[in-house]
Image (cartoon, rainbow, N blue to C red; front, side, top):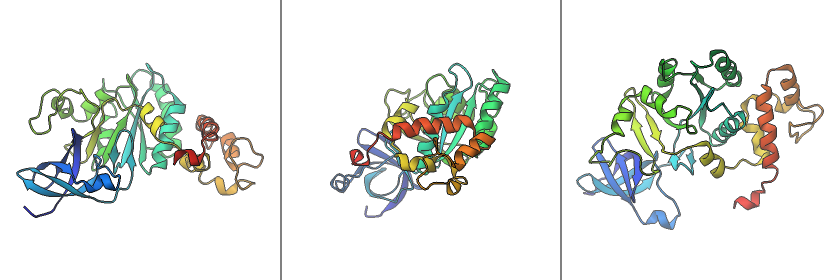
Length: 298
């Protein structure tokens, strides 16, 4: 079989890449050339494959990526959906703001989901306003009542989205509300994909009824991103989108936006157009970034 097919890697496990094409789902190995060029196919990659038999083949080419994450190993992400609960556990703005900055840095659209909104309605609204003010899609949801689930479902349509949330924030409950087949598919074993209850940390894409994919990433938490993605201090200001209009109006070139006189960002914080908690997170991240040397990353 000499034909070349185009498809999407929806799962990688045990040295096989499961590629969804318009014809079928193919279990593929990667050609040896990828080792030579030190490139690894990732879930989310658009690829070309060469079939070798019935629903088997080789990945022969990886099409250009628009972005990728190291951990979880995932490519071509349209949106990183950051799930934080309003209580138990309470939201950590520094961690959330760092994850948003990483998403911005990687050219991935961030969205914020505030879960358990039925428990602390006014507090949830206040918290959500911070991120809506900065221009991020922000959703208040309750997996108990179903509040906000339809809005999140609509947002995910025709996107490849990854959900990130630490244990206890309600990520799994929300995903099951969004598409009840997700829980069904993890409760039994699929002959083709070997799907079952999570026993590994592999990444897999699940297709939504309305169109689009959710990356199922067992164990994916904020710690994964924080360890694997680094932003240098000179790049950090561009990862806070609400700073963008202010930066050209700072008095001094090279302003760090932390303490300088004549800083337009600081002026915006004082007048309330930039949320104070966001600027506090920026300053904390800037202090950390000052200790990172670019040559150490090579």
